[in-house]
Amino acid sequence: SYLFISSSSSFTSTSQITLSSRCSSFHPYQQPIQSPFSIHSSSSSSLKMLGNIQLPFFKPAPPKKPVQLSTGYAFLAHPEKQTGEDAFFVEGNVVGVFDGVGGAAVNGVDPRLYSQNLALLTMNNVQQNGPLGAVKSLIDAARDNTMVGASTACVVGIDASGRMNGINLGDSGVRIIRNGKLLWRTKEQQHFFNCPYQLGSDSADSVQMGQNVNQRVQNGDWVILASDGLFDNMYDKDIVATVTKYQNEDPYTVAETLAAQAIENSKNASITVPFGEMAAKAGVDHSGGKLDDVTVLACKVTDDESVELLSIVSILEEQAEDAANSA
Image (cartoon, rainbow, N blue to C red; front, side, top):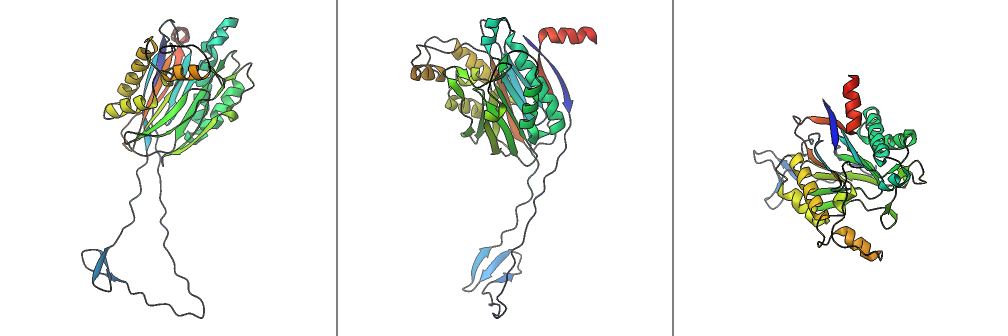
């Protein structure tokens, strides 16, 4: 039920590593001690020590190549709804996921509008603030969003050296996977069971209440951003296993496979999923999966400079039609 407008953008960045040398200092009344080591000027590039023992001569590591995100996305709406309430954007090396709170529909409010506008405003701000300005971009977007409703928010960005900065408010989240293992994850934020922290026109929650994301990623890592539709229906170990299985495929394959598996689990009335375990702990009777929208952004960290960076935001179908008619 979503259409997507995308345009490619090119980004260039460099990273430098400054090497410092170790200096020796001596007491003014002390003579330097003659070192028993001497540089051995043979082709073996080794250090010669007394006793004829050879030690390797270690050279400084070459500077690392700059990294960026190769991102694939998947959105699958609630199986029993015609339209979904999630939204997302990809702007170069910054990505975000937003889950509109369905409860707003009870009051006659379209829950898609707040999350969609929040995604669009954040993306526009990122274009000005850059990858490490993801948090500020979200703060300003939440302040300027005039739509009625509420949404969770998860936004992260990386710079060329692999520094990751961002924030997660609510029960969407981030998983970082390296070499087939879960390296780091965000934690769900809820006021009580099934009531996540959320930004909104009638919410006292703020971006500053979210969990900060300050990590280091490297070439070959996978960063998974998703709404709770994924994490409520798949355990971390299964997410890691799926990413590892398809790690040599393109990011779209990873995103689509994860989303499809989450939807399949959500419709299974006998399966045990994370949402069911949380319900049991809260004393709520629930069995099987949890029907919901599922949005997945699968981001592969790569030093391949030929990768085309995306600039894309999810938009509502009626908005796409209005844009096409006015073109």
